Length: 368
Image 1 (cartoon, rainbow, N blue to C red):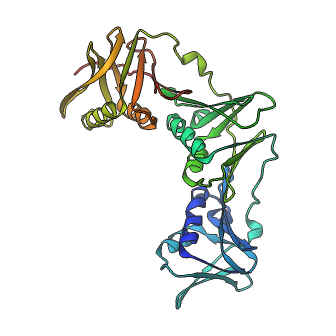
Image 2 (image 1 turned 45 degrees about the vertical axis):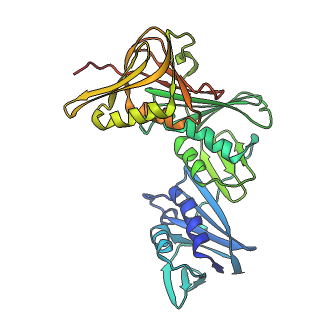
Image 3 (image 1 turned 135 degrees about the vertical axis):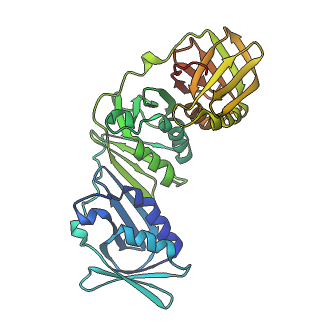
């Protein structure tokens, strides 16, 4: 293996794949990155056997070849390289990589590419495409509501539901829920329900950047995202996603229309006193708007925000982080907060955006 590449492209490719690297695998090759070069391209692949990421970048290839290089060294070394052309060459029977930069060189022992598992490309039961920025926006609006608790795996995932050309992405950790509807370019042959790991979707947002859109391929147990330069393959999460429709209220006793920026700024300031343990703020509707307040051992804050309020008055406690996550996910200028009771789920929807809603379950708390 012998190739030349710019420091920027090398660093970019390593960054793209490094979050799929296994940190605790008993197989040494899985703690590394597979380098493969040929036909003017360098391909880097990393996997933890649950998710695999492959990133391709242009390179000047003199000799095709492949080698697994320990990630902990090459990732840190690439950060520290000067901005000069970087030369890679395998020596010592192909198990040692010599990296030349300027008048210097760095040698590192690698692993045989034969020890690295092949990228498992799912045999597509169904394939569709979504514009890159649209897909990333859809994911951002939903994935924050997934759980980090690995003891309940299905809640760490995001449900992809497809019927015809109508698709829905849903995430919930049981305390909140986010849902976004969108259209795909070809109709599904049957009703599809797939639970995608939230970790995988976060990587889609992080690394996909092609103007050509993202091709999504679904099989029984896997999903693959491709954008021409990057491929992400992930296992789907087994299990039944909870029935989300039954928790979405369809009647409301109070509807509030308020500025997203004003409420986000106010909630952000109130969070400074809310504390890390319960992170609760009081949200109260009045005849002229809403009041956001916190009273804790550290002090108190009250902020009045002008809003349009229709219906009954309510006083509710929200987890401020959950509220801010929803507000940051919205693109418009206003949001509608729809309430049915002090302890029943609150629905938040941007009036100018079809197909998106978020639900926050109010907390039980009392004034101090």
